Length: 427
Image (cartoon, rainbow, N blue to C red; front, side, top):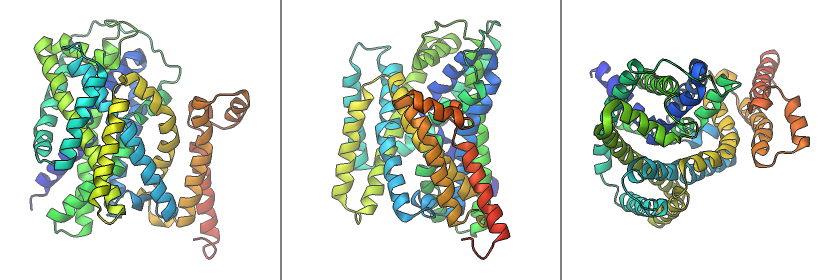
């Protein structure tokens, strides 16, 4: 067995799983708004868009299971409900967002057609591919990602050396925090939970090495994938900042990426990029609907009827939500992400640390704490009020939408101190 080759192949597969086309439009716009504070924004963004997702893969390697296994220490019912919520969010937000990105980048610049027509045709095709499980998507994935990476690296390289020099001041008052929260919008931590099991199963089928060797393989491949994501995200944020004087203040995320493509590669290069991103969007959408349908099919004794019904519902949800522009979908996603991301991050971290520090009691208590203290973040967006503001002001970091962090850490520390001094009473 060629270990280096296995690490490279697995790392590239991981990178492809996280390299969602919708994510490409987020970093340049973040840099555009960050201006001179691009480095702080990048650090924050990398925490939630690279480090946490890769830790999610490491957790999968330890668990050797599915997303359900992440939360089973809290309770089986919690884990099932969590899985339903995550898959529901995937069908409602990142899946339809791929159609919206496709329309803005590959259809609207060339054709005067409605976004509803795009999302309808798009998700009818998604449904057909989901029902036929064609290997064409696997082949597209193998060749699409390397080509997109090469084009992006070319755009980044040329844009860095051809920048105008002047950079507008940042629009963020807390760039590090804003970077962390914008990283939520990549959905990469959720992606780690959803698709990580696919990677584990594939490795187990093809590799008969001991479990420890497989874990090392996944760990090193994760570092490689994380480094690749770091380079692309950092480069896109940087060029967004370096060129923020060349675009209007109200430029959209899609228009900014297309504009940078035009400035660096010309019309032909930008057009090729938009078509490739549209194809990559399509493979992502098919993967989301297929993964959700597979999960529900498994719950109902491998029922083909359940698989078909889920595919239909997922495609219809895609048509309805996919007609809206990217900005609208991103705005709609914020409350859902404020609700589900703290729990997701906690579950990933608790499944990565040594088991002696992550008992069932710790899982239950820390997850409940994170949930309770993330409620103000969730409500602040949906229904702001003076009473809620008073509560937020009393919770450390809550004004930055991160009020769950310190209480969760304190709960974790207190329970482990209690276990240390009372080992017979801790579970």
